[in-house]
Image (tube, rainbow, N blue to C red):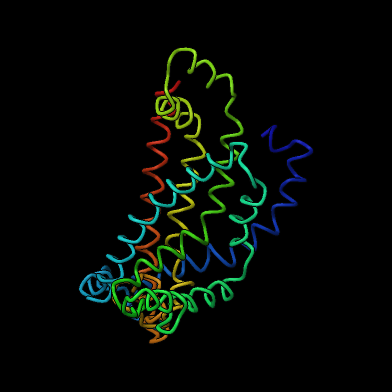
Amino acid sequence: MKKWLRKDASEAIFFLVPSGIGFALFYLIPFAMGVYYSFMSQSVDGHFAGLDNYVDLFGSASFRKAASNTFFFSAVSVPLMVMLSLGLAMLLHKNTYFQKWLRTAYVMPLVVPVASIIMIWQMLFDWNGSLNAWLNSFGYGRVDWMKTESARLVVIMVYLWKNIGYNVILFLAGLQQIPKDYYETARIEGAGRLRQFRSVTLVYLTSSMFFVVIMSIINSFKVFRETYLIAGDYPHDSIYMMQHYMNNMFVSLDIQKLTAAASLMFVCILLIVLMLFAIERRHRQYME
């Protein structure tokens, strides 16, 4: 009670109340209502339906397709994102030529509006786009990128290009916190570059790596915006994501399936984050 009765505690609560009210109104209350509706037979004058909505959800072929595509996308794109961003961060951490310009180039996608980004990628991957023109000039046939299995590669490339700059910044901040004495000591003891990377860099980047993985997973679930602008409501089967399914359920006013899918998506993300927290905690205890 003494801590709460401190003079600065009341001031902190006073400043936090507006944000807390906004968070409750726009996040907590809608989320609680969504979970509630996922167990009801209908939105208006409905009765408690138990797990019937979830059973119907798993029986839907479109939901299973969306869930499998989302899982595949996250399983492929997140490791690629972590490896590429770490490699670029290590490259930019050194005194390379045009270092400042390269850092700016990787950060630029974060400030460019999404609509402008999509226009560029549409011009590049359209049937009459730049990439097909280049392929045709080398004697290769045109590819309808967004209407074949190649659409999945396009979406992964857009995701990497859009989000890699943020992760590079995080890794650069982590690399700058590692004392150079550790690397000098490792070299004196005969450790090569691979051993230094494994025993020094990765060890002291654990916290940064943990945060980058979590943010990459969350951003992988938010790729619907780019995919929707590129391919529309009903894209190719390979890029039909969970957000497409929920958006179509909203258009058809099937609130029960929409809220059930959103609740399942929340549970999956929560379990992944809790698992990562457990791994990070065990690794920290091991290091101590």
